[in-house]
Image 1 (spheres, rainbow, N blue to C red):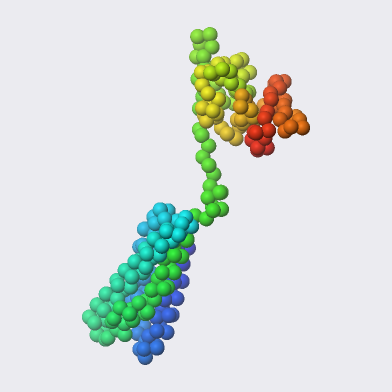
Image 2 (cartoon, helix red, strand yellow):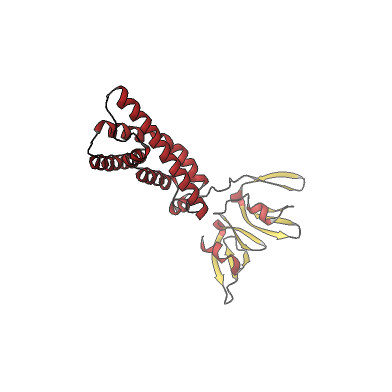
Amino acid sequence: MSKRISLISIFVLLNMGLGRLFQESLGASCFSELSILAITSFFFWNFSARQIKTWSGKWGVTASGKNILIQGGLGLSASAINIIIGQVLVVFLMTTIYNCTSPSFNMLNASLTNNIAVNLLCYFALLFYFIPSEKSKERTPTPEPKETRIPVSKQGYQFQLQPNEIIYVETSNNCVVLHTEKGKFVKYQSLKSLSELLCPNTFKRVHRSYLVNSEFIDHIQKNHSGDGKLKLKTGDDLKFSRTYLQELAQI
């Protein structure tokens, strides 16, 4: 929030400076009017920040040219509303409290005193402030599927296997065979659906027929074609396909 306030403050001060130069060109320098406009703009843009944040998520300016036009229209509309609100307050306060004439009673002078271009820049600065950068998107960790126990049965008994008990899984016809230190368990389930229940950082697809717990991999032996064998700590040898080499490279 402090960064947002600092950003808005920079544009408010810039607007005050340009407004002062414009008023001096008219031969009238009204600090009271500039102060009213500055305070109005500061609160207006802080109040509008939440809505701008919503717009930034719905119409990211990097998405397409159409979205840039939409954002430009929203920015002009917001800037015009800010100028109108500020001018209403200026007219009210200057005539009822200060009893003097504002040098920007008409809308043309008002849009130059409370510069519409600076307001538009303030809108886009807030827009880009809220749009997450590509780097921040890349750094956002992808939530991993929560590991659950795998229900299996053998000889009429029901078991609940912990994922770390599974050494590897292989496909067999319309089912999968779970190889564990407790023995083999058969489940009528696809290898793909089972892999979605297991942690992708631990369980790697190494072949269209095998899913391996990387904690049990001892070493990899590749051949000239890019395929090869996995030697497991249990002494088992499994084939791996070069199609899944990228999975193995992450181990």
